[in-house]
Length: 54
Image 1 (tube, rainbow, N blue to C red):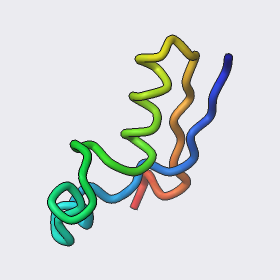
Image 2 (image 1 turned 180 degrees about the horizontal axis):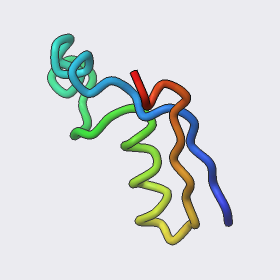
Image 3 (image 1 turned 30 degrees about the vertical axis):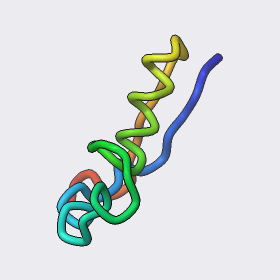
Image 4 (image 1 turned 120 degrees about the vertical axis):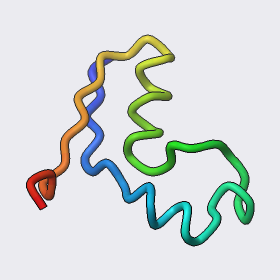
């Protein structure tokens, strides 16, 4: 299956609000984490972010 994930997420923000400690899971979080999970499951993944140049 082809999967497109829109937006990487903000790893620094996730670290600042202690996502792993408060909500569980392991980094990376957000779009990057979703893309990695889909890829590991064998899907063809495209990860894009409209704010990549910022």
